[in-house]
Image 1: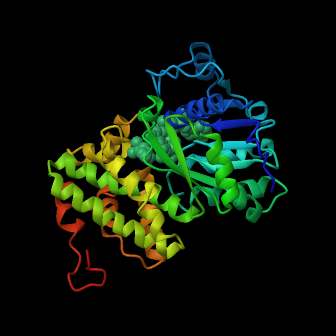
Image 2: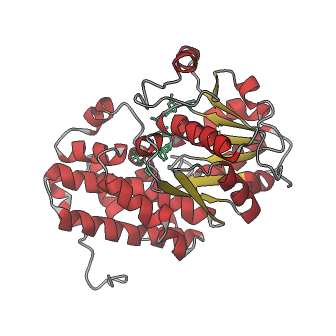
Length: 356
Ligand SMILES: NC(=O)c1ccc[n+]([C@@H]2O[C@H](COP(=O)([O-])OP(=O)(O)OC[C@H]3O[C@@H](n4cnc5c(N)ncnc54)[C@H](O)[C@@H]3O)[C@@H](O)[C@H]2O)c1
Ligand SMILES: O=P(O)(O)OC[C@H](O)CO
């Protein structure tokens, strides 16, 4: 695989929600900063919204205060959006990625690199997003899943979209199995306020990003119940421990989980009122039912759908994840939210893994 050493000529971002729109701005600002001749196109499925965003240079629904760069292009047509794109960014929620990428696959250039921004695990299959990407593209193109897996990367880290849209300094991680591919992608999204690091641990990077959403639900529940900082720090720390156990069991690296896409993202998400997962947890903790929480949320809280898939994956690999298990019990309505506390840290003290 030989990506253009000058970086992508065209990048297309699929999904015009808060992160897709913000990341398109990062890419356009990065290209301007580097003086690169690069088209950045933001694709969204709703033609009316995309025309309005193009007219107003503003995505009122998802990042209302932000003026988008003049150089950004917009489209609701998959064929033209993907034509010539040597980097395709998937900013579509985890449970919709398979269907949407399936619809896009025949327009994806055979040489394209695919970057996943989603932080979720697919329900039913338990697949990570780079696995879904490789599987779906192999089904619809001439390349094999193994070939697409080498072209599938992930970007993850403490990346609350609204803060990045406001150009607050932020670091992130681009992971690909091939270091040169990760570096190629990282160079094209390095903006003055956005610093991507690289990693070849795709598994650890994805697991850190998706499990922290489940832990953030739990920390949100603690907030909703009125518990203080001891409880939240305990859940975050033990949450990182169970995330690490799962990542290692799947073949991830320990160092990834102590870095930006592990601890960094966990701290940001669990501490921020901007986090949708933290917000959803807080509403559950305050006594709303899951249906009421889902009605109240206008944006995606991936942890709600990913939590049962994470638990199933953990059980399949014999990994103990008591916090995830407790969150799933609440989401399934098996345990009332006021009975969550004793389950969070209440493992048998004689059991393995009792060191802090
Ligand atoms: N917002 C953030 O701060 C942030 C940061 C890092 C990662 N992420 C991750 O990025 C992913 C996307 O999140 P978001 O914040 O942009 O979500 P969002 O709720 O803001 O927007 C989701 C977007 O996806 C679109 N969408 C949903 N189903 C679709 C489909 N089938 N086809 C096409 N478009 C579809 C929606 O119309 C919407 O534009 C999630 O996995 C999330 O965890 C979000
Ligand atoms: O708003 P959340 O909870 O989806 O979190 C957003 C990002 O993943 C934080 O890194």
